[in-house]
Image 1 (cartoon, rainbow, N blue to C red):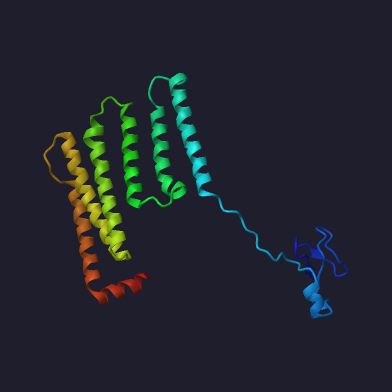
Image 2 (image 1 turned 90 degrees about the vertical axis):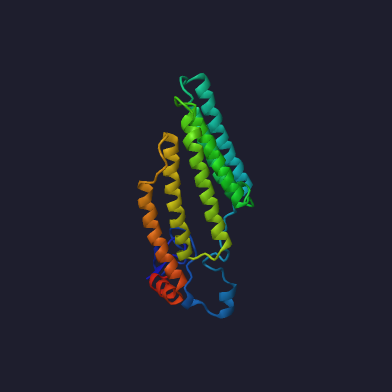
Amino acid sequence: MSYCVNCGVELDRSLSRCPLCSTAVINPAALPGKSQTENSTAPFPEKKGQVEEINRHDLGLLISIVLGGTAFSSLMLNLFVIRGSWWSLLIIGACVILFFLLFPALIYTKTPIYVSLLFDGLSTVLYLYFISFITVSKAWFYGLAVPIVVLVMVLVLIFVWLLRSFKVTMLTTGLYFFTETALLCVGLELLIDRYLGLDFRIFWSAIVFTVCAVIDSALITVLSRRRLRDAVRKRLHF
């Protein structure tokens, strides 16, 4: 029993060509000699198919046009068709955030990571500012939104700096992560207390801080003991 090398249909032994795709039937056992085999046409293609890579600049231009067109059309609809509130600012802000998120990956790949993160933070602040236009007051924007974004950006920049400046392992990454999680929660609660006019105190963030402190203590112990560190790595396979 034999099959066509091109379409896979079952072939009769008497056939010299496939009845479905007309591919020549080659029986290796029936070939007379090595020289004829070398000169015969191979049943499989010899060259591998290759897909042309997409130009990053062209893809970046396409995304810029799509996002810009979406933002502009939303603004026009808001001005002349669907009025009553500045709902288009939400779409425009989302387009701005997407653009700055995709810019270092598709348009300019050599953008320093710190600059990219800074633009991400600024675009987030801009989006929140657009939201403030459709709310009753902007007090929440200046008193709570901006400080929280600044806090998150500072912690993210420190986290990236630690990963790029020191040896990176699963244990050290976990240590950085849980430490910054504790600082983030404490900072959030203090900023909320400040915005609400309450006394500075930590309540719910103290629970997160305690849990993270216990985990950090365990990680520091493991990192400081070589034998314990090697044993943990072997058992956790990292």
